[in-house]
Image (cartoon, rainbow, N blue to C red; front, side, top):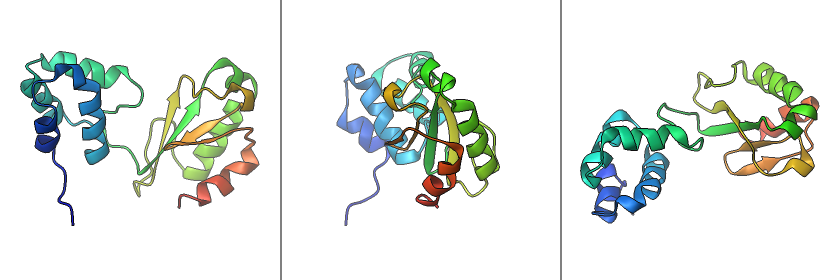
Length: 151
């Protein structure tokens, strides 16, 4: 049985490789679920980078988060095609079904709702992505069924 991977294990794997910053942050987030202040400082020290640079990268990219997320992250595309084709109705359906607003996480820690600028499936707008799975051609009545797959 494999042991639990730690931040220190990840940093050892990439020792002396500041060019691997994004890979390191991805791996840490995969292990911890988010990038904590402690982790950001450890990464900065290990790579001999200013903590502000590491934090800047962690907060610039939408796939990183510096606060805990739910097990299932629902990203709602807010690009022009999705918006024009009904993203607002999808957002309303998600908020109603989950009992939370955009940017929040359910009390049981199962779901987090987030905006994203584009998920690259404009041909099937409006669309959402749950973790790594994309759902397109959405209507509000499809939301309960989709969420049932993750409950």
